[in-house]
Amino acid sequence: MAYDLIVIGSGPGGYSAAVRAGQYGLKTAIIEKDPKLGGTCLHVGCIPTKALLHTADVWEYFKHSADQGIQCENPRLDYPKVLDRKNKIVSKHAKGVEFLMKKNKVDTIRGFGTLQGNGRVLVRDGDKTQTLEAKNIIIATGSVARMLPGLESDAKSILTNIEILDLPAVPKTMAIIGAGAVGVEFASIFNRFGTKVTVFEMLPRLVPVEDEEVSKELERVFRKTGIRCETGAKVESIERTANGVRFCAALANGKREEMEAETLLVAVGRKPNTDGIGLETIQCQVDRGFIKVDENQQVGEAGVYAIGDVVAGTPQLAHVASMEGMVAVAHMAGKPVKPINRNRIPGATYTEPGIGSVGLTEAQAKAQGFSVKVGKFPFSANSKASILGSHDGFVKIVSDQRFGEILGVHIIGPQAFELISEAVTAMESEATVESMVHTIHAHPTLYEAMGEAFNNVYGLAINV
Image (cartoon, rainbow, N blue to C red):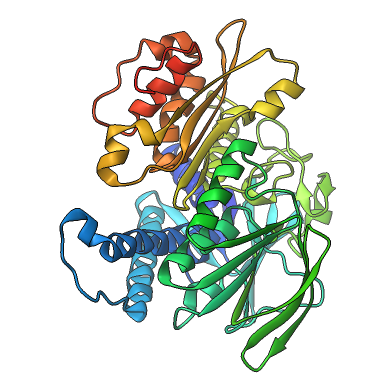
């Protein structure tokens, strides 16, 4: 059967591209090797993780309810029920993706898709095979967690983002290797559920992609809440034991420490799912499994596109994959195309306190030669933060002193991952620090801190 578009992979990028293609009237098929549509993000990534993080937030409120004047003696965490709720959320949205395919007349093809060249895709589903043809193909096969050499994950002690989501009970102890978004989010979850957590990061700071002050503040709060943080550290000689995992850690102070933990989460990054998909049959450039694309997401061969985690140099974020899908489909459909501005991509980390960021860090801005002017405002001076009892963190504005251009915004604090939306909109609209100074912010709100931070670029914040 011939199509206008075949999408290989049904994660956020793939299914969003398929929906948009259907909206444009393109005859579209989507190929998925797993039993349900939705990809890593929906089933073993963004959605189940954030469901657990929300439960951790609620649990934290219950543990400190007396501070709110609510007497709730001996609250109990029913972890099987927590997992059941998480699974129901995932199932609901998986059915939603199936519905979207039907609504937009997208054919769902089960099986493993392999490029054959000349617009053909071979689909294997068990013993059955079929060959599909299309004018356009989108590669949206996503990524998988990297594992340390010589290790294999299991359902009990050595974990990736997949296995940790289905632990039958809250472990007493957990070691986490890697302090990127995945590592620190699970640290935040299980620390609040009562696990003794230790985080190891080879680089000098937690969340290394964030502004240095954000990293410093997250580590301060983590330590305050009982999470042990070892940066500049390397975990070696890992072995399973009867009770979990034993390993040696080379610490930043030069000392080596023998440790044991009931569970070990390996969160050292992700690798692209491009093995065996037939890249050798098309014209494309590949770097360590990642596919290089142009500004329209097109690979070296006309009519073939790549989006999401498989793309070289792209942040491995669901919302980036979705927007890349919009760009690719618009291009193939002959619609107006606006390529992604890499400096306008928001990052969101759902720890407590949360992190939201967009644009250049202070160090990056200075390295690029800007005359940098910074404005900061702490949540300790924000009324709504006081009401919520969440005072840690701040808003930081990085701007160009000469023209008032907003170069970057970095937030750590309550609902930072929601607050960053104002900064993204401002930067996308080419607002300046001055125009944001004159933007009225409702009171009392958390986002007042944004307005105060913009004012403080000029030293004019009111409440600090």
